Length: 573
Image 1 (tube, one colour):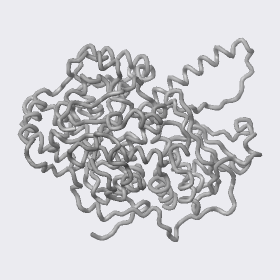
Image 2 (tube, helix red, strand yellow):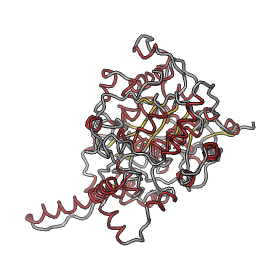
Image 3 (cartoon, one colour):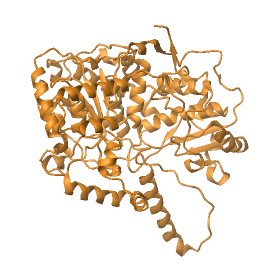
């Protein structure tokens, strides 16, 4: 691939995605006359939609990983035509000069490796049997049916939480269903994404699992008998007591409960050791992608690495045996010479994120008007809250670390860490706001930037085209197996799950770069005076601080931070 220009092609014109829930609050049936029913239904439906979109934008938003820009934007950008949108021209020039000087030098960036050797003292062990293992209950209290909303990553979390809830209540778990959403438009179910038989075998000694409800329960009207439980009836980050109080009595009475729209409804603490360990076992061991996803994922990895040997446990966990079984003549790109390591970048700069943040990104008055119009159209509740709150300026928001990182800022961070101009970068992310104009700063510093659309042929991608979760699984694989994983938003589900998997299986050799948006904003505020040497030093300190190994703190996401005794075992170094 050499120093080619950006290799983007065959891109789809898709709007940004929300993880939309189909959960409906179940109230008592009113006996209004028929002539009022249509208008009442329309009013409630519209209100529910506004609440859904506004409240879930950050907690449940997870991009489908579509192309960087649409075909229409290649011809004419939505924001600013083809004029590059840049906020830090001076630093970009310094970065370009620094990368040019290092172009023919040996790549000495230390960030290709973990910076702290203490990480190797933690090893995976959530699948080990111990005297504290719960074991499968002999007498089931009933059946739990879960319908999970969201995209690939939200659904993965829901599956693991459902396993823990079933164990907690001594219930039998029906393999979770994945809700179809008009936003995601993906009918994929569990067996289309994960190896169902492997899942059963891995958890058979821990939880009662079945594929379907018994026939005598299938015909029941769950709503009518009171067995339908929505997210509205279970609080976010619920504790075990919430399930024992709300769900267990219904389960014992009716023999079945249906958790509809089951999302982030199980907290991380306080939770018994055994249940935490079970969640880790489910996430890190029981959920393996189906062979078709593994096979195409291995194509991605091989074509950017330029070789097909599985290097570590992480490769084998995600790709099975496929990495070493790909024909060498499968694509002309395989013959190209180039480095065998790559950096994966999860860039979250979709219009939803950008507009909701209320920040400014260098696009001037046109940008402000466009984002304000988008907010008014998509986030009416946010607009209402802003009218009743003290205004915060865009500058203040940036200094507080509340602004999504732009592609330009991501490029400056990578340059400050010493990654060379020719570094191969795999880009995972959704529809980038501003398209090519916004991406120009990144692609000028790092032209060897590719997506799955570049690395796979049309025929290889064809079986995935209309299945957003399966496409997202490819990005998941490419990010997790990368030599370095760089994120711009540590709160996203993909970033959380991938970085957690790398911590769990990486053996201290799978670094993740986590910029602090607040610290980076402070550094970039000195754009007009900062020397490049000082910029590099401060960026490196920021990243090193983010890489410092820490055990999971109370209440922290166990899927993102598995370095705790419930998930991993600690050995003396």
